[in-house]
Length: 418
Image 1 (cartoon, rainbow, N blue to C red):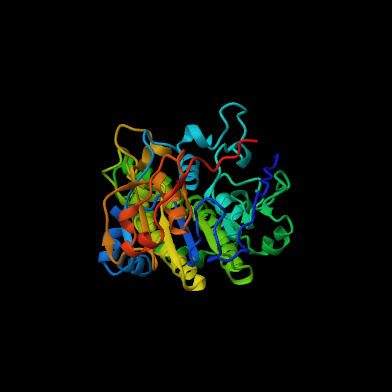
Image 2: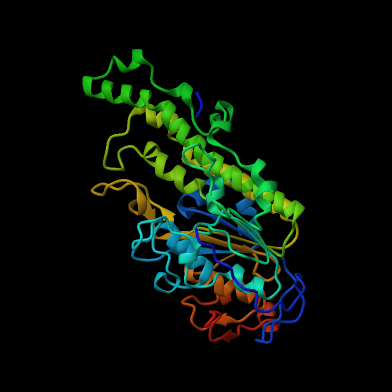
């Protein structure tokens, strides 16, 4: 069983030579000394995480929670698709300001691309001020933008096919493509052994067992058994995408270390969409076979454990600095009376964890919003917040001494007017 038009962002001023601790850019900001790692885990939900941590699982996330600040992170409402929310996380602005409203451009019917975005991202803003950045896998980053460092776009994870050659500008600089190409993992690279930690094929109902059931139940079980290989292939592709971006981020941190490292991991979200119902028979408004429950009933839980392992690798390789982990929304699964899939499955509350010298230790604070991450990140780096941003600084996450030394300041906007 085996499972275009590019944005060229002109650098208007370089105020420090790529290292934190230099003077600001004439707008009142002074960059702090902490390196930062931001890990985006799509769809991560405290309702899954907290019980797992209570069982002694997810040790890497638990260590960050215990040493830093955590809170519920309210997503956009009404519910939005992931690219829209991640664009808000990256800009501090609502969709009407940043322009990313879906996976597909509603006007052209083409896939959304980075040049549709109408607001500047935190990596662009801080890069202009001399902070070096590496951005890997973030949604709607193709074609790759000019950054003060490195970018590997979301489209990079797709393997080329004869009917689908890869587009240009998957990376910045373009020459980086040759360096990271060998790090891509394809679905066919995922082995049965790789998948065995997530699924329990040996637990599937046998044909003899199925024949003892009623006719309707027997046919449901047989259909489920016939779908096992296809669904295992789906999981293989999910795993390949996360492994690709993990490999790239680990490589960049080792070979091209930067002040800010940003990586997006989608697997928890897609695994939840595909396998949530298998763990919740009787709760989702449609029948779930015994075979599906036996084989895939713990797949989501086990994928969270794998995401925690990836987080651990990233934190270990990153070394000393500040760590932020966030999700764009939570996950509730298919609900009776609603079509399964898409944003219907999403929950309104995601996660935020921030650990480092600037933040309080082991504190759970009230709920904040996905809009607040960019303003908070700018404050962490000693930079002003744009008055035209819709989010606010999460001030009660910081140590009081940090805010005394780096008070929250603002400027009218970071947007370019030319």
